[in-house]
Length: 114
Length: 113
Image 1 (cartoon, rainbow over the protein chains, first blue to last red):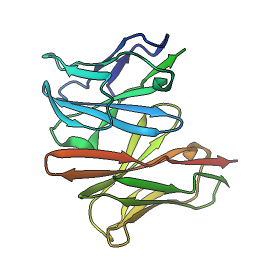
Image 2 (tube, rainbow over the protein chains, first blue to last red):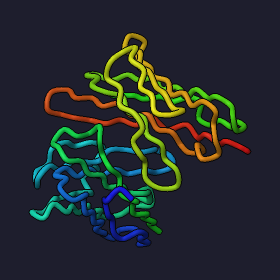
Image 3 (cartoon, chains in turn red, brown):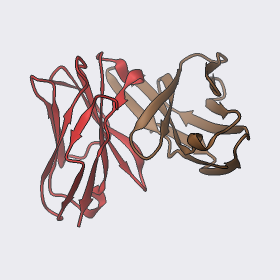
Image 4 (cartoon, one colour):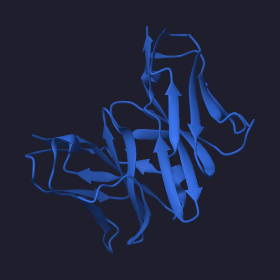
């Protein structure tokens, strides 16, 4: 158990809908990272937040957005969902701003878009 | 565009065998290379490599980086069924203020008893 929690575990929704994925980092960790893992694209970095501010951006679509709240939990919002958005979404956390090398991954949220 | 290529894509061995997994990369501003093990759930961190020629070792696993030839290898000796997993290689690119972590597609290792 990494100490990172993600909810929900599974999510099934329809095309065109909007969903919110939630992540609680390990106690004391200020950085939160979001990743998408699909069969065809593999694991892809989406976005990083550090202490409430966006710090780095990866392959995140414009239909997706994220934020980190004052209590350091983070939410990833996916809108206008398409079939291709079906994937496993991981959140990870680390203690420092540049702590990429020591990220702890949560168990993931499996999203299925029908 | 940053690129990370792992080989082989899949590997099946018997317990006790030694395996070598490969990762080659092309990135603009290399900072580090990371290896992860992913079983059924989330990836877990194995190694971080930043300097060429320095072997990192943890039990039966070891890894080394060659920054001149732009590749890394992950060795697993005396494999066990518990080593069965997808092994992911990722390269951290830190060009200016834009950080990026690019993953390879992974190598699926199956260790049969």
